[in-house]
Length: 455
Picture (cartoon, one colour):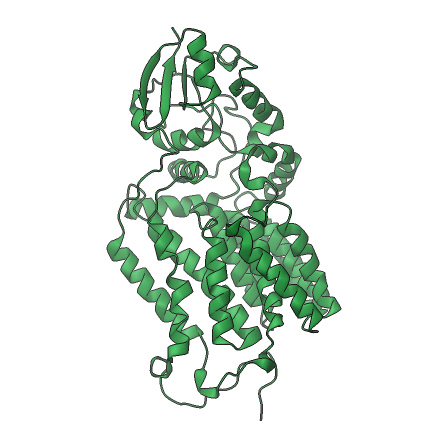
């Protein structure tokens, strides 16, 4: 009897899976192993670095952060880190492999999980090895810019796993998944929203019930009901995000975003061929709109939309043979191989040129003016030096970011307003020109940065 469309036929061979691997299945290695080419690069994400320090602080204190311990401009103000569980995980990894030697392995494994999950979702729809590999390549292409070691990469992995879970009848894993998600990133509401939309699309009452239980579970993390306060505080400071590049509107003419454009085209083709139903639009339309909301939203929207885009090549049109089997064994084998190789080959990463590594030892333990990227690095590198600003938009708010930009443009003397004694900025920054003009001497230069001190 022929297999129903969208379901995998039974494997006729009784041989072990490793003896059933075919050349077609081995093509799954290409996109899953592709992240190896990117994880060895330098760390250039200041936000990730302050998350590492937050894990150290919380581990030493034995409790989650509830006020700002890092800045002198917001010191002691109410602030809760939404990613406490991931930060504690960072600290545990750092205890095993110091000096951030674990970062490459972490990025590789999580990126591999994301790519593998998307590929399995595509394979379930198409039954085609070629289309599945293409989906994996597009996921890597787009994800290369998003596979940063920040907690958001864990959010992307949980979203990809949730997409797989939702298409199974036994979806009990949704509840613990949402609990973990709420403990590592505020975007858990994205997963919660997807469950609700799928409940409406499929008219499955069990998904609606799981969404309610999942919301309750999210309220039972270390922050309790304050997890919602964190979210609302973030939304209240939405204007501050306009000062951070990753929250800008996406420009699909940029080559790194072309995979998202391709998915949108494929969705149009699927709709034209009748592969999508009107009820599918309940999920598709909101996530298309979400993807256009910011650069940061493009990748999670892509992950959710990929199975719908794959409808452009239906399982009925594929030429899969019964002996081809499932991609899962190959993916599992690759994941284990990658993990072992990475553990053996792991080495301390180099901090990127975005950070004033050459000058950090020259800083006095006194108030310092710098930008938000440098702030994230300094939180990690100097625990004795409170920062002026970093990228925690929900803490500083839009007014403070606007004030900072006015100071950088020379329209406001931040050093006088905040009683600052030293300035550390990139050589071409407006701060260097402003305070050199006021007679501040240059104390040191290096790595593209200049350090000035009050005369």
